[in-house]
Amino acid sequence: MLQTAPSPYVTPQAVTAGFSNEPIGTHTGKTMMLSELRLLLGAVTGPASYADYRQAVVEGNALAKATAANRSNTLKYVKQIYGLRPELPVFAALRELWPVSSTSQPLLAMLCANARDVLYRLTSEVVLTTPEGSHVEAEVLTARIGEMFPGRYSANTLRNLGQNIASSWTQAGLLAGTRAKRRVHPIVDYPAVVYALYLGHIEGAIGPALFDTRWAHLLDTEGAVLREMAESSARSGWLEYRSSGGMTGITFHHLDGITGWKGV
Image 1 (cartoon, rainbow, N blue to C red):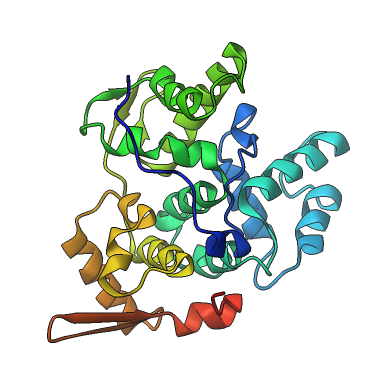
Image 2 (cartoon, rainbow, N blue to C red):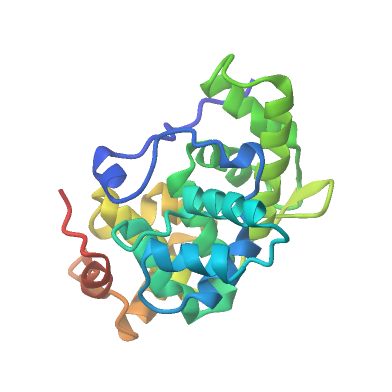
């Protein structure tokens, strides 16, 4: 029996910004599709509507799929897990940070996919609490899903979920290996830190609490290091970081301006 993990559900405030508490099911047949997202955001640069992304995939074959049906089906899954709509702050912030550093893209994609897929999010505690170098079995990941949603999925679907979610954690850089997955430490660059803090901001966290959200924990990095990277990000204009007299204030004027987020 797995130890009780924190609730995977996000706040209603976050749901209005494009997060989801629904088991959308993308991982029953797909991974988080990092390579497809890279192709799509490379083909459609700058501000864009969902119609622009759809045109690039269906008409321009940006994802290099053999048939029209395959193009449309793949687009459906990419939209499902990332949103692809500029009016969703969770995607708009990802879109803004995406071209800054290719090194950060796996973690940016993972954070967004976690925000939008509760089944993926459910397994995060299993991965994060596994010591570095230890193996992570797909069956352990699906055990967590089975506990949360008893009787909802068949044994075959749970097997697919476990394999695909394990692959997504591998794409993100928290697991490594082909069949046998082992826990590794991800490569963390400042765009991923900014995005993780911003997701916490959308959920309503403020000040030091931003470094103790589920999103910050997903970076698998010590708090002191995250604070240093946040200060560096402030010097680049991605956020405002103020620390004085034991008080820490962090705001996101740039990203709020991009996403239109004002809270609810």
